[in-house]
Image (cartoon, rainbow, N blue to C red):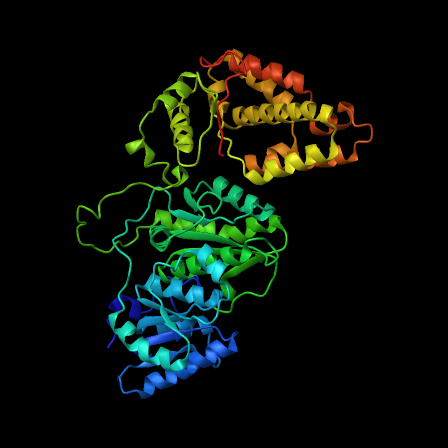
Length: 532
């Protein structure tokens, strides 16, 4: 009876719950025309839907109707029963009167399987309307509105009969950046640690950043997930600002990814109660330092997936309009693709010649594209030193608070100068010691200068671990503690806590080493990309 492809009615080769092949039997799963998903928390709404289902079954329209309330889950994994019911239905009917994480996960799962979704909502209830508008994922789908069970039973047969899958499935796998990360609207320590681990793993990734793009469309979400090999999302504690919308978006993306056969990593800040549909695949943490071990299996699985040959189904040739690609709204998500259509503008050429040191502009004007263009132009040159610094805004907020709260106006400029001098010199030294070892051995003088930098750099645990965002955060914390404890409010109270070595000696050694590179006469050549 079902019009769904046969492939989704056989156990999948990969399931997130088993981290391997599906271990369920699909024999004797009843086929339905429509299967209902709704929350039981709003009793008045759930009773109306249940009564509407009863009337649908009695009105002689010959529709086979299923509901999560009628599933036989005794002694069985609830998610597996939901998965099988979706695979053997023609249409998923989901109530979106309230913002429910389980329902959003189930909507994402249905769309990931290629099943049409009919959203229904009680128009007499205004609960979560603002959050739904902010979420933005479902507002392009047509709703079936109802106020009572009679209206629901009368309007659904036509909607079920006319339901069609709303998205294009001719999506090419993104082999250049196969990981997709759903970033949080706030940059807490867990988010910083997560991004640091992903960067250090060597896996290329794309992101959805709600601070850059306020709304994620259904089409973009479907494309970003189904073109990826792995999905990472980070659930926020309920007390966090913006957690409701973000966690709802994450539930949808997780369902979409799991149905599409992607490897999904769901981290959760704190040990709050988790939605039952995906409870067993969530990885809670109480300390950000736990994230490294939690993500290790995901990273290992990603490398296995990248190295293995994946079956790619044959698709029909794209029509002319379907082949058009206008690029991503964020240059970070298409670093490799930029080389094919990046236009070297006058601003880019000025920066490349060294005539421009500061690049500013509104969002979407091409600052990030110029940044990556400049990096690419000099990245492989042994005569240039390219340091890619991409901090998160969270650290700057804490830095501002530390300086303005504890320090006098006269001391603020001195401390900020000392802070950035130390940070940038340490980053330059870190970059040289990490990447220039082989280059330095080509000349005795260069090797001697390299070794002098190693001795001057010494070892600072704050600056040796993590990526730039983590190192910046650690230094901000150190400054905050030092400025808060300062009694005399003088430079002598604060700067010694920042400097863990002779900074003048390190500066002299770096200048001597960099003079051996053709592109440097001093430490003054720095490009800054302003991300406002």
